[in-house]
Image (tube, rainbow, N blue to C red; front, side):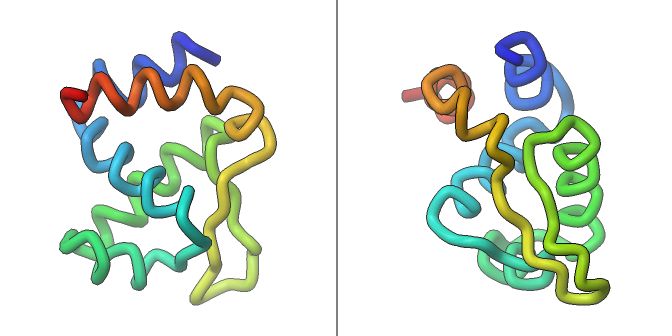
Length: 93
């Protein structure tokens, strides 16, 4: 999991955007439109990053169709310490 986190957040294009999304989802669940508005990104950009993270079992949706709410997965929550280390590095903290 640690290698995946480093790759998705620190080594690949879009890692900073994904880090912002995760930080927002740590605070509360959001749908893609809410994330786009809150973070100031295009809706399609947010959807792309949510798909990348869902495909890698970092986030999951409520699967309601339009307006799906996204949450962090139990697997990601179980690796909270590693996640925080990577996110702090990405943000330069």
